[in-house]
Length: 258
Image (cartoon, rainbow, N blue to C red; front, side, top):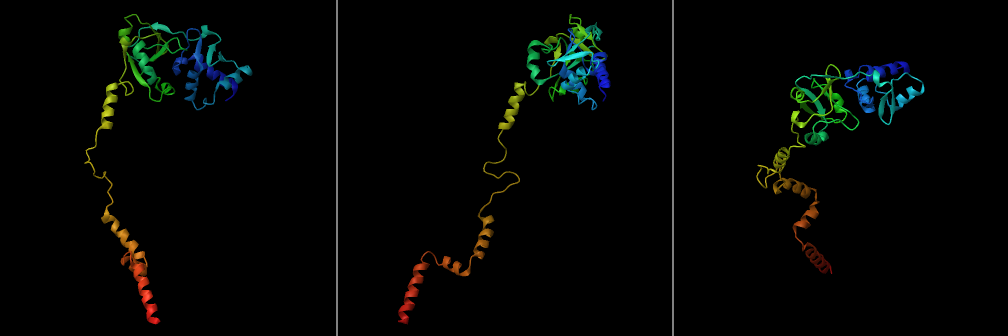
């Protein structure tokens, strides 16, 4: 892709229509680079873009509407960015949370990450799911009762057709499903199942297996006996005194010859 075309594409995604891609800018005109990077990964034509690519575009004088420093995008003209406006939200909004977030959300409510001024919420429950998977392969869906939160004084900003921004939502307006990592009852129940003794009788072989007894070994012993030479077999059958008896017979033959 030519550098000029790439610069225009990045400008459109990040600054002209960010809400179409689930992106938004902080009130100070900044945005974490990793969020733009995740969006670019969804387009096979743009997966090659890295931080070094942005710096190369800056070096050749490409017309980018932002700069990149220490993993943070800074808009050159923040006043030109789309401005979210206060709106009345739909009755229900959705947020995909990392599993590691759940305990903090239960304690403090839904609040922005350290590098963010707002939390992005969606009216479509599937929106934002793919982006959330970059941070957690199994994100948890948090449901927000926006219809009750708005009259209580919690402000929602419209940032696109399906995206809304909020600075904080108390736990009273959140519905979080229980997960095995958090539900002690589920963990105890799973532990009981793992410790539950088997119904199989003690001392009985496991299903699909059998014990080897003397009856099963007899054919092998017969084969071993058949492989022993006849003379050795006769000697073994005579017992441990066969050597002594053999010497007596040999000595007797020598006396007879004399």
